[in-house]
Length: 80
Image (cartoon, rainbow, N blue to C red; front, side, top):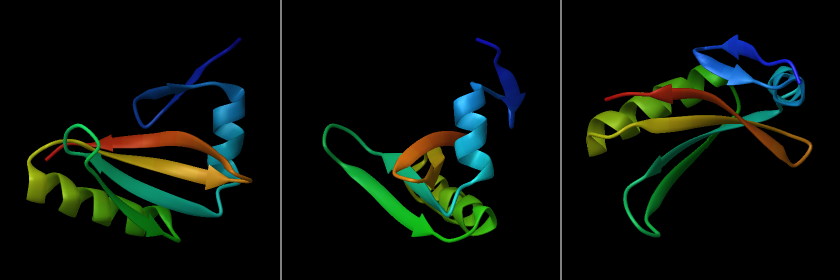
């Protein structure tokens, strides 16, 4: 299986397809056991902004996922 790098993350062809066809994005921040923050966004730029805000507010990395057809793929990790 060939992997390609996008935004510093190695993706499989299936993940790249999900990212290309994404109809929404989600910014997540996991703040300990069972505690997470989730912000749903319609564009990647909105998700990046939300992830930056979450990362800064909690001083830990936030994750951005692309969602397409009930599948998800990690797009980026945003550091505080």
